[in-house]
Image (cartoon, rainbow, N blue to C red; front, side):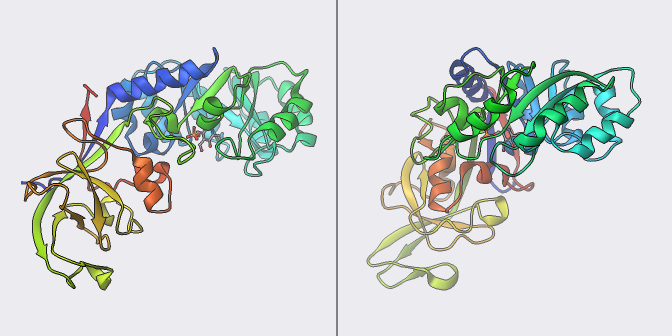
Length: 363
Ligand SMILES: Cc1ncc(COP(=O)(O)O)c(C=O)c1O
């Protein structure tokens, strides 16, 4: 029998979350962002739930090929554009739209031989200081692209650093607007936090984490507040139980000491499965759908849970590390991530290759 751990991808939840993003997008078209193998869900597994999107946005050319191989004929956007000149050949062949964020990418386009002019998204660095042309350089980049026979249509794009937090987006929107006001072309500004928290004029929004059912601004708001459903459940089972007495310790480093009699369960899930090792005692977990807490350090293949609230549990009992239990009890990935000092994005992307993945078409 295989180890009992399983990540389950919920097709209906993906479709629901995408519809939720669309409802907040004020008429804009919606990119389903499927970079990082659909945020760890698997492009092929997530595709059915996300096929209602207007396009797919991603990074790797290999991922773009996988989306085309699924039969998708609509728009695909390379969010970071090409990494080397020959990537343009695949863009021509597969009809990929691509970001242009630096002058080298314009040089490559100018030298590219193609019968098919490309749709490009010219990226402005409006304050994130990651990729893109500074506002002062943006219009000359636009003019260069506009003069190229290799370029068909130019869209305008920027990315927010603080859409989920107190600084907000106004300073970046102002920088973007000041330079682009009179330029033709469609606009794409908002990511998940942007589209949920800041009503803005977009022609295309980029719906990443919202599609997967995690709140981009947790703990300010949770997934329920935004009407999102978990698209992934990580489930396992108890391998064993232990009865502790006062003074007994649990796991490596003896970081947890029982202050009285305590029954614990040992779960088949550890950091080698992608569960965060930094999730200390008290991280929420469901056993047979009942909320309890982890105790002691997470080890490579196992972790321990307090069975006080669920005395009927024993070897074989279902454990939900995040997502939904089989009976529908909910444990938001954001709560687990928060307990481990990280974000839902990281946990879903980090589920290890050794974890079997299934698809639950019925949510
Ligand atoms: C350029 C760009 N657009 C959109 C997204 C999607 O962001 P989110 O998952 O927060 O919606 C990302 C993710 O980092 C990104 O880099």
